Amino acid sequence: MRRKVIAGNWKMNNDLGASISLASELKTNLPELGENQLIICPPFTSLESVNEVIKDSPIALGAQNMSKQDSGAYTGEVSASMLKSVGCEYVILGHSERRTIFNEQDALINAKIRKALSEGLKPIFCIGETLEEREGGITNQVVKRQVVEGLKDITEENLALIILAYEPVWAIGTGKTATPEQAQEVHKFLRELLAELYSAPAADKLIIQYGGSVKPDNAGELLSQADIDGALVGGACLKSDSFVNIIKSA
Ligand code: PEP
Image (cartoon, rainbow, N blue to C red; front, side, top):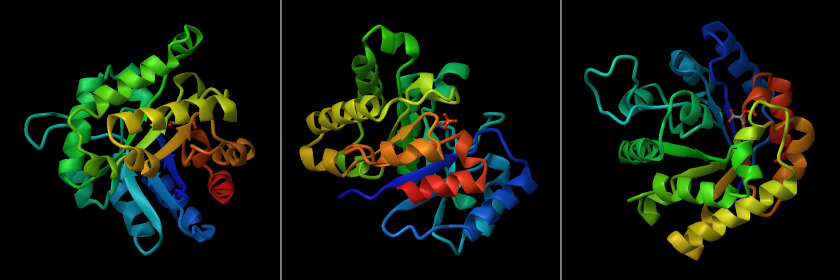
């Protein structure tokens, strides 16, 4: 049995005060996690302070993006070692908002994943098709390309440090959730693909999260699917009670 991993992507929400309040509320109301794992990903400006709040709790810290560079003249960028220095263990890479709004391509995402791993950060690697691609019947083709390109030159040993997040773009922030069957179908396809690319045991161990309008009322059914090992949550992680209810569904 794989553990469940729930991650909250705060996106560009919560200034410092609001971040500390949300992290503190979450810590206070945290249910028993057992083997399961919880990650929160606040904006860069709140990472250090949120880390202070959660450091003696089972909540892990992640960032929402990272540069592929180590240091230097890259105005506005944040490096892997900077993230580690403020307590990050995880980093979200390849989120669809980075792909579409900031034009991040598979090769850049691959470079970022390799950099994160080489610096000891664990990537939450996001993939997913647009509505047009789903309606065009090319969902599997699209996610296969994203996986193959994104994981280029990544060893089986390092794959074990990655969390894959399947997030259909049409379900992110739209209130439209993939049905549990639709999500399971893609997750199963991804696990079979990973078995082909690496090995059956490596694919079997891989955590594959679902993301896209996960809410307390749909989390239970999604998380009960055989190949859905957790959730990457946007909107519903911004209120501690709804996020806690999602965590309880795991
Ligand atoms: C996300 O940002 O990764 C996400 C899944 O957002 P939402 O839950 O709001 O759809």
